[in-house]
Image: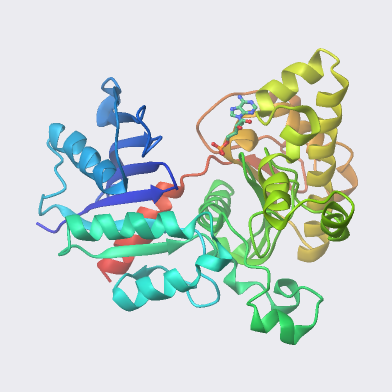
Length: 400
Ligand code: AMP
């Protein structure tokens, strides 16, 4: 019997999301979330397999080490203890791989050191990812730990798409270039879209629109990423829940010189208080749609700004790819918000993009087409599954 379970960990600064998968058939054995780590009111929500009721506990979880012990206890209660010989590997989501990591990597001391050296590129994310790796290694030092990088899928971007048009020497010295993020999702969804069309990934060109609280677009030619909207950090590109996306870089100078804001204050303003939240006070698209529907002008402008930016990226990526076979919507907004999908594509008939209102309004967890049969470009809703993708890449690497 070969071990076939993979534990996927997505460690944030105060949370750990986890899933245990059986890679002999890709089934989900359990999943859950520990949040508000380090506070008195930490919460553990654990969902066993087979639709059994979710178990919830609140109470202090001091740190990531305690969080992983709590996860192990929950899994043990389901007969899925992490001490089991069935556990083949642990797959960790790591946000920034820089130019060094372009594929999933088995973690050893040297790799951990290099991931640590990338902290300046992802100060909010990589430290938490590293903590998750350290506690998982301490728990099962005998089991391979694999890092799956959010940047990796975008490493194939050509140099002219990855470079900012600034002094090349300065850029190189400071590792300033476009890396892109959400790569695991873009990889999974572009492949799943090809499968939905009944074709091989190598044969199709896809624009993937990952619209969650963070949002990014990618242009994928024959399974290979050739451009994406996020850059050095996840701030560039689309209008997001709380991030501005693209803006004139001189806005930053103006905020400092005229507004008197510090670099950290500008960072917080653009990452945490901008996007939909900055435009109308709500970052949840459900609220924005509800308020816009009631005629609230700020929510209406926020919705239109979101869609306008999205449409510009769709147009840009049609131009980048030349021929587009499919546009795929995914993540919280992309999978659920029919009005966003409809508005993003409306008026693009000349580009071959049309949405069927009836198909667009269907709610489902399955990948599906929302364009009419005769459409030149398939428009699809393809639910993302980053955990399954991380588990698959991890398992593939350790069983190679
Ligand atoms: P994610 O980051 O992929 O979990 O997506 C989270 C976002 O999805 C939330 O902030 C919501 O704005 C959005 N969302 C979830 N469900 C819906 C829905 N039914 N309609 C519109 N937006 C939704």
